[in-house]
Length: 316
Image (cartoon, rainbow, N blue to C red; front, side):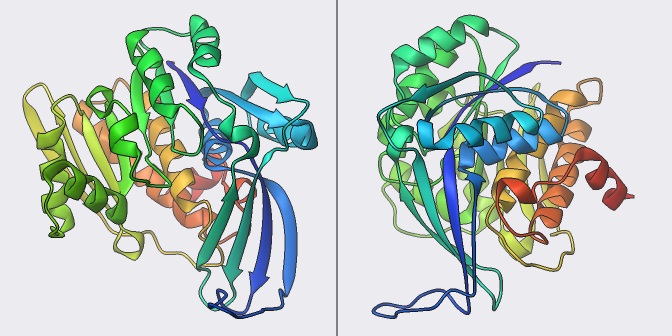
């Protein structure tokens, strides 16, 4: 099986359970508080590990978060490339989760996530090459430079540009991305930035327009919340679209649903290489869809990610 290097963020998540998301000028009492390991990078590595992928996480933690490194390892992830910074505090996420509907809002403190460099990536990437994959998000410093190093080493690239910022299109070499994983808002921002237009195409048009803008892309996966998943892939001169309805779930906390989807999709895509390509994509999308549904039924971020056996049992 191909190796996956996740060059991603590592956070300490402080979650406040609140009656509703705090309004401007409002002081709100929390009815619950937890502290857990998280970060988009960590969550996606946890999902890859629990889904059975051969995944390695590269990143930097503060000495206040060595326990998070150990937690990532416990999810089936190789953490030998994670460094400990003795001076900088670890990155943090302050998360509000609404009792009303499970919605969340998040404030990030970068901390050690802002200490990543292309030089560090070059050292790590000596252990990877063609046939391997790199997974990246947008929660670390020098992400675009790291992506360039990985692509030049021959790794395939899957990119989840979250959180979406204006710097994504200028800093990341999107022409080197193989699979793009976005939600509808992220895809719309990318489309508007690339074309200079201000309209908001429907999702089906969005994926086609983005595929035309980036000819190297194998595919785009767009999560649509309650409307399920839309994807567009091409292979050997053929193309195929997928529209998958959302898997049923009792929503408690949506914090890591997208991260769970990313990890399970890539793990399944790399596991089922003997399948015909488009069937392989479809089965991977379905598996990720179920995994994300299970995750929203549980509180927390990394702790909400299911195991592969749980996903297979739910899939029937």
